[in-house]
Length: 531
Image (cartoon, rainbow, N blue to C red; front, top):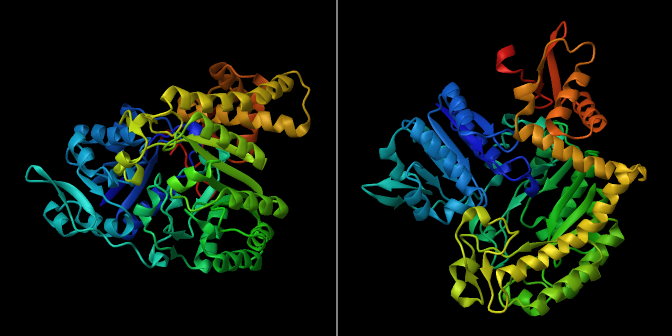
């Protein structure tokens, strides 16, 4: 039985990480006996024609994908294209959006056969062996599908209590070299579950309010596996890594005991850190912590059911600075009862903390308390166009603020941040920057170039050369300079760096070469034409 899992396109500006949830799903499918292939369209160009050609070549029995609200329409559209092309393929979808929007999804997209609700690994272990036997689906917990002209939802699936029983995520199926070329980090989870009740978050309902902890030993085993792909930085993607101080210390001690040297970051809450725990984290390689502070208005924090205070935020930031840990903070605007004054208070508080910070705009995702009890809040939802649910534009209004006023607040902040950046870029082109500034600007342009190379399949389409001479890197660089319109010496520096790191390779002799992206540092994959 062959299963294809698809990583659907995701905007570069959202800094997509290698899709960890999809790797967990792939590992569950492999453990259930399936041959699994991941088609990753986050770091490869997507077109319907390319999709159909790859599906025809792979001949899967089932195709699945997951999504968040932002890329739901793209993910669902991919399954629609597959189903219309080959109706015999069973199509599956999972993730937070469809978990909380089952009826609308199956009604609007009849091409989706089955939805995996909530935590998916145990469900997939039963569904995959029965994928061709629809009569058996009724006995599988945690799925939804059509039956007798209606929508049938099976008994809810219990959360997986023993996370150590899960197979390690199937990262070997991802084109890791492409993510590493972009500079994105690896990610792991050490736990699932969040005890907090924030009205804007889906997480508690997806993974439960009681924390379920993985064995520290197995977590660090997995970290060693991730590092073996060549990563030198890892993000701990737990909803709340610092919920258990004793366990964080145990984790840090295990990293130190194994003498693992890499940098890592984590998400935390301002009321779950102290000076001691942050110093433990710093000594074990943690160099950045992200807090969701949300607002500079205490009454607004209560309305969000955040369970934190402004003074706790101030203290947490001071402790991070004392430990030498970079601090990031996320703030939101467009909150229930938001006014121009409360947004100003948030801006003042963010500047007071003197840390790296940014804004999201409150967005009513399916499954959130906010959306399901919208009448209880001073908010009006203006659209259900999921493509606009990126939390960077207002899709709601308050009684005091229009969407335009909310958007303008964030836009003005971004312009304020852009001004020194534009000045730095101008100095870069004039050759008046120091080494640190040079690499900062160069890194920005490097990411833009590489993402274009990936998202437009420039290497696959134009990486073949006859008569490239003794320096195939120069030949490829000149070609990409023409395609991109970017500075020639910069393009060549980038390509030489990618080739030197082993992310790009060429095969061939006598001046006739074909460039290709490698898969990861464990496995090299040549283009089909060269196999």
